Length: 62
Image (cartoon, rainbow, N blue to C red; front, side):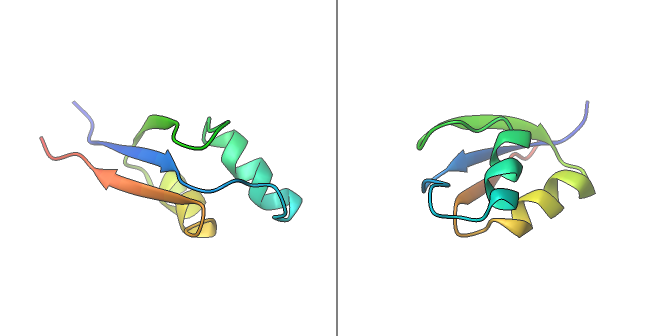
């Protein structure tokens, strides 16, 4: 089974540039406080790294 991470949106994308808002949507985040589970892959880590001021990541250990 693949390792997963929980990504939580902490701040709004309003006021950010369009690329940051698009990254939030691509992660499946639509509102503050929403949590999504994503596979631990380089693509997802890169997306989270692009918007560290808007989200937090909680690594799940198996």
